Structures are given as C-alpha cells and as structure tokens.
Length: 423
Image (tube, rainbow, N blue to C red; front, side):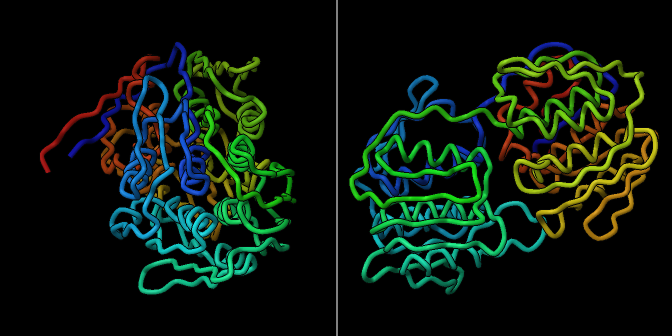
C-alpha cells in the first residue's frame, strides 16, 4: 500500500506548473466517441481518471497512442455494442458522458451506472430528462443507464431544474448531432463547458452561448476530428495556491487562466495572503508567522467559489484567527474530510451544510485518510502547516485528479514523499 508522508512546517519557495484540466479533458475524450475521427489532444494530465478513460476508449475499439506531450486518438471505427465491465465505469463519475456520446452518434447507449467520490446523493435525473426531451427512451435498469432513440434524436427546449455540469455536458453531446436546433436553459457555466463547446465547434458543430446559462445548438451530422489543447486545471491551480498560503513562503503558480481563479484569489486576499496576478500566473506570498483572517465562504456553481475547492479552503481556515464559516451549496454531504482534519487537532463543527471552524488550534501530524479526491488535497494542505509527521493513506483517490502532486510540492521545498507500506 502506498501512502504519502509529510513533515510539516516547511515554507515553500519556487515554481509549480499547472497541468491540463481533468474536468475539461474527460468530456472532450468522450466527445471523440460522438464525433468519430482522428484527434490530436495536447496537455492531457497524467492522472488515473484520464488513464481510465483512455482505457475505456480502447475497450470500445479506439486507438490511443501517446506522442510526446500529445495523445493521438482515432475513434473512426469503434464498436457501439462493446460491453464495458461495471467495475471499470464505477471507478469514476464521468463515465456517464459515454451515454450522451453514444446516443448522439448511434441513437442508443448502454453504460454502467457511474461511481466517483462519495459526498452525498448524486442523482442523474437531469441527464435522463435531457435525453427524453431530445426524443429518447432513457432509464436505469439493472445497474445500467439505457437510452434508445428509435426515430433518432431531434432538437428541443431543455430546461434544467437545477444547475448540473454533468447533465449540461450530456445535453450538449446528445444535441450536437440531433436533427434541428436545441436550446439548453439553466445550463452550467463552468470553463470546462466552454472548452467542450469549443472542441466540438472545431469538429464542425454549431454551438453558441457556452459560458452563459443559455446554450444554443444547431444539430450537425457531418463532424470531423481536430487538434485541441486542454485548458489549465483551475482546481489544481487553486489547490497549490491554498497550499502555498498554508505553508507560507513564495510560490509562483504558472500556466493558469487568471479569470478562472478570481473567486479563490478573492478569498485568499481576504484572509491576508498576498496574491500577485500576471497574464498566466499567480504568485502567492505569505510569511508563515503572519496571521490569517477568518472568512465566510459558500461553494456555489461557477463563477462562484467552486465546490471542488471547498475542502482545501476549509483546511486553510483552521489556521485563521477567529471563527470561519464554510458552506456547501452544491452537494448534500461534502464534509467527510472534516473528521480527518479533527484528528490533526482542528476544531470544526458541522451543522447541516456548513462547517464552523474555530481557527488557531494547534495542528499536529498523525495518521489520516483521503476520503475523496479533494478531501485528500485538504489533508495534504493541513499537513504542510502542521507540526510533525502526517501519514496519509488511500492516496489512490488523490491521484485521480492531481498530476504528480508529491513531485510538484517536493520541488518547491515541501518535505513530502510517497512510501510503500506492507498491506
């Protein structure tokens, strides 16, 4: 069993380069199934979710070849009837994008119910709603999502009851090759929605409005492959920004899109951290002895503070003076990581969807676990600022979304390493 071992209280100095955004790359990789053709995808992050997706594409009959910093993918000839084992698709949430992709290209889909991090109920009712609105019969049967459009998909007006990134992606995928025009209202506005639309437009699609709450799609049957560069990962960037603030020092975070980081930057500045922003970088400066100010933050859909940064900022508030309030406005239960922070000495009370953090309590290293991807990042951040040695297990969850997090933090001075322990 591999674990991450961290000796805290080491200020960080240096530069960290951000990889491509996992959450942008995943829908784009599944969109290659929708389009069918040859693709040249650059800046794919080396994380387990991406590697699993490439494995799924290969199981469908696609060819995936790494060529330097790019990956060549050919989905021209794939098998729409290929059966994917349930234990494969259950390893991540994004596998349900294959439903929209197959339905859009072949008029039918049969995909195992997805898995991913466990932080509350994650229904797919909005996904099924969009498929049905576009003319398909769609339901969950025997652990599989099944969708079938006997007479083909046709454009329609989709209004989501709640903002959902996953359902917005699936609606775009299914509608891109549907007959006629589709309007999606109350759509998610995240940068990875914009990236998917940009990719599909380069393949010959007609999509406008991505990045707003209303997306318009004119169906197009004749699509083709393209070359595409995955945008930088805003959550990876935010995680290292918070880590640098927690440990103290001076760290340059390069290859970012500053616009995507505004909500995180604003909260760090509010806490008293110096953040210098350039065209494609953010420099984080903090004296480790400098006190941090308490904050109130609520995770909401983009462009608000991201839910995928909520655990990390909560870990940082453990160092702040006074009482901070960290609320979750997207998922039902995303505070399982709090128990791990409390093992390290944090004083946190969870009431409903809000964590009340009494900052300033001494944090000490101990044995903790990564309960999910971003919760794992939270305990790493806490460990960087804590006294003594922290040992983190279940790190396979962290590696789902962070490209060489141990190497990147070690390169800027963190005392961090990956160690193999007997099972």
